[in-house]
Length: 352
Image (cartoon, rainbow, N blue to C red; front, side, top):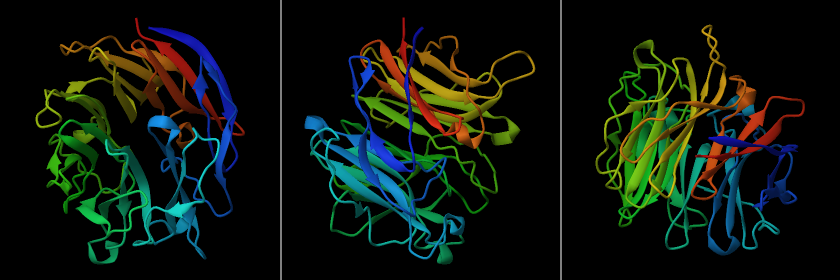
């Protein structure tokens, strides 16, 4: 593993930008949208979906009128989206992701083979009559039809993830039972219908509050990797499972962490089938350095040694590191630097 040095950092004010990486250099950041009364949150951050021919879709959150972010879950904010058809140079006027609910958060986006963009989100429209539980809803960006209820009881503040396989879309999220078990669930969108939710693994994590630590999925063909954090039985762990049949079945779970993980996971698959997983680890008394770690899983299930990519804080200001595939051997990592002002740092990593 080789870290090819830091790429330039970005100092961003409360507005949305997009920047393109071209030949190892960042182009100038382009403004997507700006305004007053935005919901700026360490965990519920803007998301971007990229499609062919320079089409981009961005989503961010705006506080509702006469409310504040402190009124969380009380209808305080909703997501808006904007699209670009020229690689981010120009953007459409913002529109709401849904007008059917006043309490929407943690939106995930998934480009579809037919060109549409699927949105999945946490929704509080039935919270008052649903035992104080949020629901999971879905719709296509810009669609006029009704939102679709996917799961009527989910965890409050964990990110959602989706991936496209030849069999359809697979989504992962943290569920919530009446006795406060908050394990990871899977649900699929096939032939225009959502399947019944099922458990990814029976961790039995009983926690009377949201851990703000969502799962991640990544698909390449029929191969699908799922990674998540759990602290069931007071034992924090970062786990991953790999499927070779579009998520119908999974292999055994593999533990990746060093013993004191914070979670905040991400994952991807290289062209040769190697899974690349990143997570945040807390520093330990045995000399292990806290920060963002990377570990690979070979196509035959062999775990490589963990590698420290960057020192990082486990405070909220450290955010959620994200990675993406650049080519057959290179991965781009983006993460938040705790500074004043906060900065986004990027790093190119070559996997030997």
